[in-house]
Length: 383
Image (cartoon, rainbow, N blue to C red; front, side, top):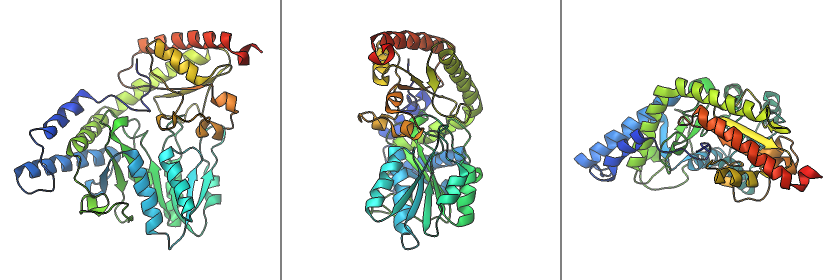
């Protein structure tokens, strides 16, 4: 039973079917002029249209990348290097994905200054803090659309409106939201937006960056003129086709999938909080992704709980897959003001379209049993 869709999602069979010809029969390089190349190019441009349609952009504003991390790096470093003569101040939040956080840390070593906005107990950036942080030399604001661990949705449209009035470029990592909730780049007032295929039932190793017309970035790598010279290199046509198909399916099913998954999420959260003492929901209960339930349990360690659930056939996590090898508590949970022991007792459950009410009932039962077992063994609980 898979409940870790924030880490990755299974490839939709329709996506895999769409990709298959481009590994064998239609293997052409999209930059060549003969028929094999033209077929690849046509498929790639059709995929670009599908990605653009899902987020309300024009196809010319979509740049294909290897995934969310590259898109984030391209947006942040590309803006910083392009506009460093105008200013060297960047604003971000304290709960960004490592692809954003570590990129900002790197730029600090290059002479840039970064302001990390707090998110408080609810896990949401406050508009007044954004306004207070803006300086004359601020060139970029980068705030994720929704957090990858606790699922809280940020006030992106409002932040983007402020950035636009101030003439500041605004980037949002929307890896967790595209395909799960409505995302419209015009309504969100973003200049740059990151997407990853494997979070919306597409393949790994492919993503995209929305670059609003009129926004200019410094390329991070150099070579041929692929992708408006922002991302040179022979295109990953099968991956691009897969991303396009995943976006097409997501757009078609978005409303129904959102409603169905929200219903399951609410069933899961209520089933835990109402029946297991000293269990809590991390982050705002309402302004969160429809598929995210991030819970914490006093008296246990989250890693032990994950292993107990794994033994029961349930795949879950304590937080970001990109940080799973670190022994330190999640920087996201610490930003909520939790104590280390509380942060270590947390569990992320992220649902998908294939999950059922029966899955949720089994998960609730399994969590109650596992937490009870771990608490009986824990000196933290029995002291």
